[in-house]
Picture 1 (cartoon, helix red, strand yellow):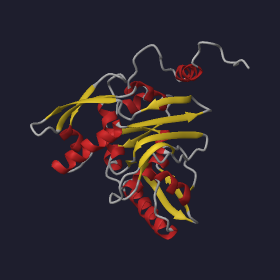
Picture 2 (cartoon, rainbow, N blue to C red):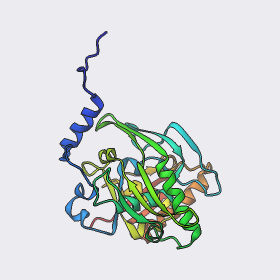
Picture 3 (cartoon, rainbow, N blue to C red):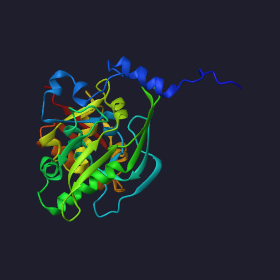
Length: 287
């Protein structure tokens, strides 16, 4: 039986190109992150940006640091929206470290077209995520960069851009080492395909100084809340899926989420947040 698709056409690539064109993004010119932000957002240096599909999935977990990281091989991650599928291969990524390191690295490259290199030092990176400037945290940041490189993410959304294609959070990098062989400066490349997840305002902007200092659970809750203009009540069970938490006690999880709600209120990320009837209710602050 003959295929109904035209011969010689990559349908998935055509669908992605059409999607980008509808969002006003040229497919024939290099594109950089700051050019797709609204003017008022693009000019602010206090914001860090993350795709909504990553905010609403279990890509960054809240597992305890004493637990060994899992190794995923083509595994489907939890996503708040059942029409979106994310298939992940690589070492488990965590909100406690990998997420904020990645957001800061994206910020360094905001003025550079995707696919072209930009540079930063490990000392600047550790400082900018507000970690202590010592050997332990320098090594921790280096480990994050290695994990962010050594993965493959396949996102699929049939209602938007179709298949995004395989994306690594960091496409590639080169380094300058010190006398001990440890990287001190990085030259990083971001995958051009990542633009599909930012096109059309499909990203969340976090106020950096508040966001980076949150606990992992509070950070994941901020991801969900700030990726919705008017967030609906979220059940504790669905939020546990987004966090990939292994806390099987509902009582314990309820207490953990309650503390995260208080963090968000104290940080003035939301006006109110509370757990009631095993759902998370929030009122956001509209500027």
